Image (cartoon, rainbow, N blue to C red):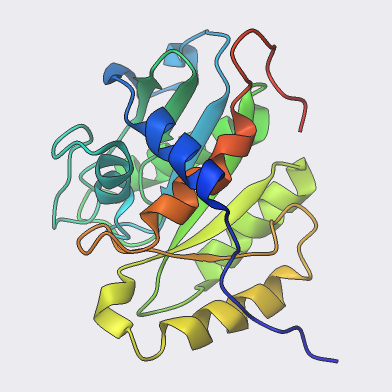
Amino acid sequence: MAKRCSSPSVDGDRIEAGRVLFAQNCSFVTGAAQVGQLPLHALPELAFVGRSNVGKSSLINSLTGRKSLARTSNTPGRTQQINFFNLGDRLMLVDLPGYGYARAPKISVTKWTQLIHLYLKGRANLRRVCVLVDARHGLKNSDRFLMRELDQAAVAYQIVLTKVDKVRNTAKQTRCKIERELLKHPAAFPAAFLTSAQKDIGLSELRAELMSIVPKLGQGMPLG
């Protein structure tokens, strides 16, 4: 029987808890252009990754209610290092460079692409990866390559569809197609989220879902 596709169900208490968490003070910590520059800290990390110009920085800004926390640009390849943001001393948000097409020298693209993969496969306190996918285009081979790497490294990841306001009529169909494909990926969460940073679509539900990786005050970092 085919998998029935429906919107993730999130209760009101979790939505409110997610709102409170992401309303905390959020500040830039550091940028890392090589592995040796990655910061050492005890917070759980939530990473955002995806193809160039998929909207990673815009989503981070919208989730935290800031207009310019993470730098945004219409030029693919603007983010060329891993940027870390401390959210209320409870969670570290990590904005990774985009992969795929970028308006930058090939050697630079190769360098930061290698950095992305080294970070994702070797970061001990990385609790979840949000793999952002442009809803207009769906999964690309570069996304699938990353997903296989995360499966092999046993790094939990969540598919987040961006820019759904531009394809309102087909966004749910795209999500269902992706969720069927996710059944083949052991490290993937089964539900894909529909979001639009510009139109504030799906952000409350995504915040609520991401609450699960944050330990309650007074507790240690979760194991899963």
